[in-house]
Image 1: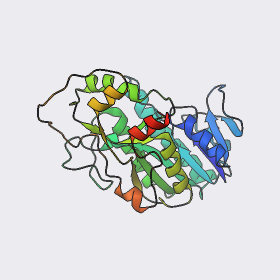
Image 2: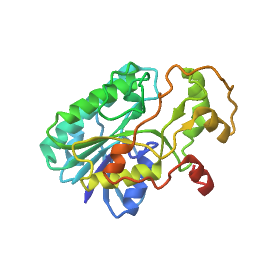
Image 3: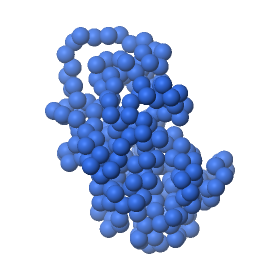
Image 4: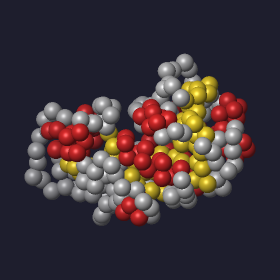
Length: 271
């Protein structure tokens, strides 16, 4: 199977790429400049905002794993351009040059409404106000209406493989005024790879699927586990389900997390 991976040098993509190569997949990676990529992958010079550069990248592929996204910038125009226009260009290239390829796109659990009355489910209405999740909803809509064989993976809070992402939780909690009792659904890089392999085999065709481990953890506990401090609070939570995803559909489709909890990851030294 020949797979094209976008965002293959990013936080999620660089770790997924290594696992796809280890699984024996023939991987191509779109890169905009000279970057080191693992042995066993083929670098394709291209840019999602340059449609003509995508033709060679998608030609003949069996699947596209679309991970490229912009989120950590104060410039909302950059976010919308990269996440929506870039996805539109990739979809167009796939329709023209790889119409039978599976198109698997990573999205985010941040698309869900903060005031949900339960852990967020895939069929819930979504209307995020921040640029990043709003742009991902727009990109999801494009893919859903593309006529391609698609699946969309809405990821919980990603961590593992020494990516440093958990260490950002105290800063994010302070920035967005999260209650210390707010719990986050987590997903380890190993389990993103496990889910993608399922999706490559068709288990998630035509579906939006939440990916999360077995045990949401409070931001207060996460802060403690990464060696930070956070002011405790016994005040009532305004949005007690914010950050939590219902992972039941993924389990029904055959996904079982290899790293079931953050505590398991800590025991195994894989955070």
